[in-house]
Length: 234
Image 1 (cartoon, rainbow, N blue to C red):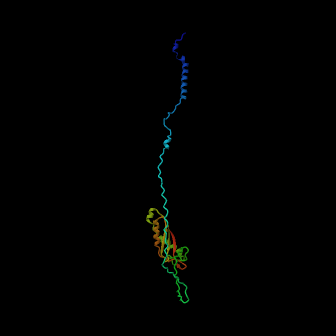
Image 2: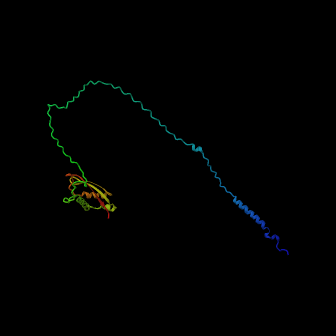
Image 3: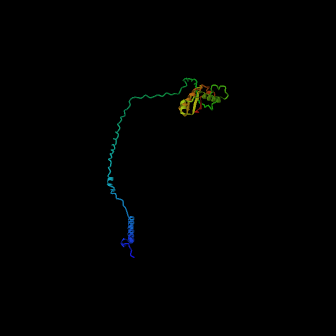
C-alpha cells in the first residue's frame, strides 16, 4: 500500500540539520559576547607641563640702602692760655674751739623730755581690761557681756535691704572696727558678697554707742574687734 503523504511536504525530514545550524549560531553568539571588549574614549587634553612659564618669575626690584658717611673727626681743642692771678686771696683763719681756764663756763639747765604716747593697738582677745559696753559695768565677765550686747545691738538694728531681697542676695559680711582711746568707734572695714549688704552692716556698726575704752597696763589703748553679720533669706 503506498503512503498518501507527499515526501516533499514532510517537515521533520531536515530537523537534524536545522538543529546543528542553530546550535552553531548560538555558540558563535555566546563566544562573541564573551570576547567583546569596550574601551573608554581617549581624552584629547594637553597635560604637558610648560616649565618655562613657571620659571619665568618677575624678580622684585630692591632698593639699595645707602650707608651714611662717617661723621667728621672732632676738632682739635683750643689752646688755653694760663693767666697768672695777680689778686691776693685772703687766708681763712680757723680759731681754736678749746676754752681757756680764764673763760667762764655757762651751766645748762636740765632738759625735760616729754613722753610721747605711742599709738598702741591691742587685740580684744588678749587685752587686760576689755572695753566696757554700756550696761556691762557691773558684770563679772565683761568680755562675755560685751559680745552678748553686740549681738543684741545687731538684732535690734538689723534691716534686710529690699534691693538685696529682690535680687535674692544673701551671705556673710565680715566687719572689723576699732574702739578708740576715747571709746568711740572708728576705722570700720568690711567685706561681703554684695555692696548693699556691706552698706547695711556699716549702718549697724555706726549706731554703736560710745564705750569705756580698753586698757593695757592701766593705759587706754585702741582695741580692734571683728564680728560677722549673716544675711539669710527665709
